[in-house]
Image (tube, rainbow, N blue to C red):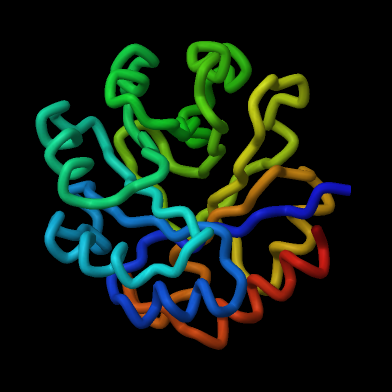
Length: 207
């Protein structure tokens, strides 16, 4: 069986990025959303990204950003993937010439399957507990049974995950990857290395 991947999002310090990589994270997330307590400048993100060892993907998270801002960040920061958390349409998401993840806001109460079909070229679809306009990282979960089961794209599960529940989440959803931010923090943007290691160990055990 294919193993479940793990992404640690909301990294704001190089030491946390290095620890995530050392513990076995497959990707780290760098946030460029203005309302997030984990927001980075392009300069700070570039310093973190440059510290990340090979074969750990660097993902940039945006929320309804001006296209010029996204292009400027992409020029300054080596990002393998873009992650869009707002109401961005597919033509916007694909315009930057990078693989992208599209977050589906499960807090809206909308038809997730029809929303997912709007992004046929997304590298993966990320299901999170936030509502449209939110950037995630709230620590809230949602009803995992609402995730469509017949999607063409890989599923990334986020929202309220942590070391104590990620194994159960993987067993219930069988996602391609799981994404955590607040569930492995001591404060917003500051990662707890013990929690990160436990989280990734649980992902490996379950997936």
